[in-house]
Image (tube, rainbow, N blue to C red; front, side):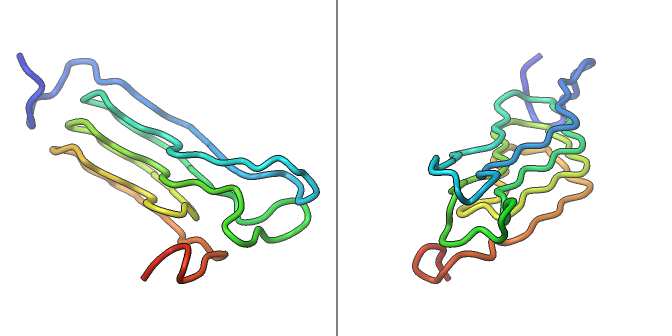
Amino acid sequence: MGNTVGYQSSAPSALNDVFARSGRFSSSSTAEVSVDKFVQVNINEVIIDNVWLWRADHDYYGLVHNSSNPTNTGLEINSLNVIGYSLACEHTLKDMLVWNGNGGRAYFYQSEFPYDITQENYGD
């Protein structure tokens, strides 16, 4: 049986209890941290539960400024029949969530736009 919309596997994969953070822990650090995509799902029939993908908007010394620790995308789904419970993507500089697959569902989604951006580096 092929992977088509509506087909349900008897044993879907699971991704649960994931916390990812991009950013320095102190503003005195000289290392720049960057992430293209926190999580990318490329297989069908996945259940995602309790995922928090966070481009840090603050560190030990205070707020992060000027698009530091750049992170492009929080979660990208490229597959069919993905179910998401408690998805959170925060402060990414491009797309927080990209959902390319069909037949999926999300039951709770939370996001926050970045605070440290400008018209020039984020867009309209």
